[in-house]
Length: 424
Picture 1 (cartoon, rainbow, N blue to C red):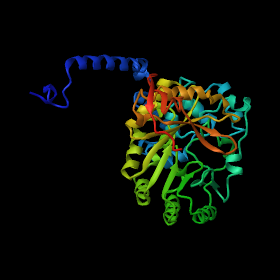
Picture 2 (cartoon, one colour; picture 1 turned 120 degrees about the vertical axis):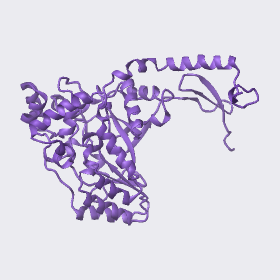
Picture 3 (cartoon, one colour; picture 1 turned 180 degrees about the vertical axis):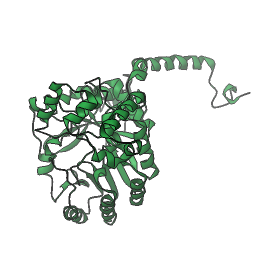
Picture 4 (cartoon, one colour; picture 1 turned 90 degrees about the horizontal axis):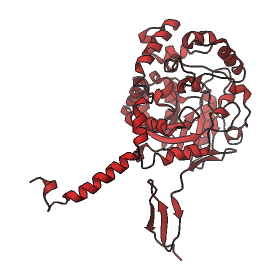
């Protein structure tokens, strides 16, 4: 007799109970019926691989590159696409689109790595990758607010941004593999690529060394992985020597925009500076490709912990099913969904904004409907540099109901919970 059929076994369940469990399982499955119906039709970097390979071949031909070049991040940086004549050959732009790009470029520069350009669906101007990388007229038509508080009033030392009690940012460069159209810093990115000098970085390090409450330092910019390996190695080594700095973090979108940057040599260097965390930004399932998965594998092999911070963007990921597919793809490649940021109301990026209710609805349809590991925190950024604030659906209905909490579950059931009374 098997254990499960033995009435004396703790794993024994009577058949009538199993029938109830089957009915409950069917009801729970029905709650994700809509997602299951569209799951396999949502474009990803894997199921659109054939199209991407065709785009890759076309880009290599246009730029005069080889297969070996494609695997070299330095080739991509040296051949970044930043003129409309080259982009037109890749995406078949019409005259109106070219004019819009060139006019928008007078306000904020643009650039796209050949790798990221290969992910664009050339026949679809609503392609999430196209929308994130190619300027449109909305960037110079829309009005918005300017928010300089995060930098101007929260920089106690060169290159430092400090918003919190025990952690801060060192802005090490303004260079990125591409300039995202939704970037909240894009108006602050000058037209010249810059890696900030060791003298300026030394001033930032001296400030950290004199601030024993700082235990967590984030290197960003720009993109931290735009630094050469030896320069990044030096900064991390200097932080290692500051005893009260417990962890180092890197902010980099290159896992999505140029994953070839994550080389074995880079990972070997990062392995010497544990603990290192890297937060990246995947906004669309189309960005999660085999190359991105290889980059994550290398980082994890070096002991680097990888998390993701998405931005909630209209037409790109403000759909419950698309966001669910994105977080599923992330956990599949071992990247922890960490934050979803609400897009800020800044000039030139307002067309990406959606109501906060969209973000709350996404969390409502993730919590309980998929793995807790795959549920990020939805964040709005407080004005005037006051930091990140989490937003969540209202699960707590009544805090003190005669010593009990009244709350609702993810499925909408209203329950009481025995609480401990506050000390008199």
